[in-house]
Image 1 (cartoon, rainbow over the protein chains, first blue to last red):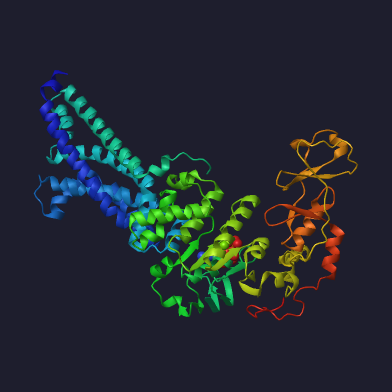
Image 2 (image 1 turned 180 degrees about the horizontal axis):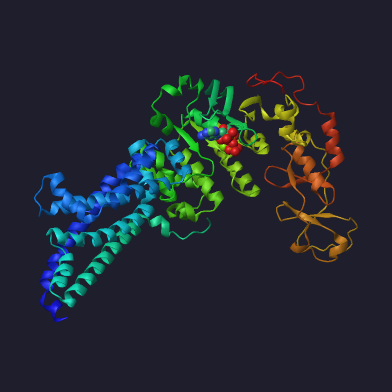
Length: 215
Length: 376
Ligand SMILES: Nc1ncnc2c1ncn2[C@@H]1O[C@H](COP(=O)(O)OP(=O)(O)OP(=O)(O)O)[C@@H](O)[C@H]1O
Ligand SMILES: [Mg+2]
């Protein structure tokens, strides 16, 4: 425990970059997955293609993807952008299906009502479809957040610092307290992400908590 | 005026949902499309606002081809009540009602005021405004659906079984509210139902469709009941159509008898009649009592309330039903304010019916002239 007391500053700095490396891809990934998921719903032939492609992407080992990034992007090996882009790819891979399924969960009679009222394409998407898909999308986002927090720690192996460094460093130097601190910090971070998404979902879906008088 | 001109819809799988439909829905009137499940009612309705594209034929709105209009804009000008209400679950009742006004760019305040006004018009308590649809009963949801369609005051309304998901009593109330509104607003309405009673009650004009999307007959309801064009229509309008058509025969001067009455609290001692009518302080009928059973003060619990009450200004059907449903066999007749004017007996109503001319016997089909083809 003395190790932790002596290294609060380091832990905090690493945690901050961990938040950054896991969180930014979460947002970027969601923004990219929204139109892709919409397209998968819109053109039914695209759905299986997008779903299997994203499934495949997710199976690429993270280390391989991190290592490939500089080659594909032409970035420097130690550039954190490599991690951000790789994590964004993972997030998109997870969320395309979620978004497509979320949009698919909107009841057909509600969509028909929206059309009949004179909702045009974009307004219908943002005004009716997306708000109703929030519960499903938020559930997928929580999975992606936890997965991101865990995968990002591998980035220590390519020299991009974050909480994973506590694990590799602790392992190299046999400091058990450091390893435990790394694990606990990752878990706490994952819980924080999870809580924030849950909070956002609650704010966006007041109607789901409305007490049901008759269904 | 909405006009279907030789409209056919064949779905990609080959199903012909609507087959060469030619029909006019006149301005300011209610045209009811009625027929068994799957006969193409919803499909016909949705072709009007282009939610479904016809395979062939044209549909015009006041002479303009709806196929050439901007879809979203046209739809904002047509009120649509979707089957099973179809409210937006994520919006409050008030915001649901304000949907089209907001799409039309009204400001928030004007939209809210208008939405509140409409909730009142369809008979919903103002407290419900901030609820979500899941917190409403089926009947309340359907009222919201109607209010939402009316919100931007469109001249044309398309209504797809708007009152189907509620019990008969509530449905009856909703229908009355709707007729009241319509008598005031005079919209051009196409109303879909599979319930012939609803069609007869609401329609200025009733179009009967048969499975396969063929128009079987279109006429005003009274004529439909007395002159079904073939066996299918005859079957569809039902076995008791003779009785129901009485609804369109206004009662002539009924041979009213005066009735001895009691009020609650009065004594029945000494009365020899088997049944005596009980009224309230304003002579509105409450029910019948059997003096022999009560033998003392008339209490509210002793009242037999089974009989229906008919208005003197109403139809022969109402008068006959009042007589048939009355335990004393004397039908209770009231004036328009609900005050007792007398009673009438079943056989007297029947002889009125027999002496009255059968309505419209040789009248040519008045409204659209289309009588469809007979059963092949
Ligand atoms: N998208 C579709 N693809 C193929 N067939 C369809 C489609 N929609 C409807 N149909 C068929 O077209 C016919 C008419 O359907 P429609 O929904 O218009 O009937 P309806 O009269 O409204 O029935 P209900 O009273 O049950 O609502 C039915 O046989 C139905 O199965
Ligand atoms: Mg239908």
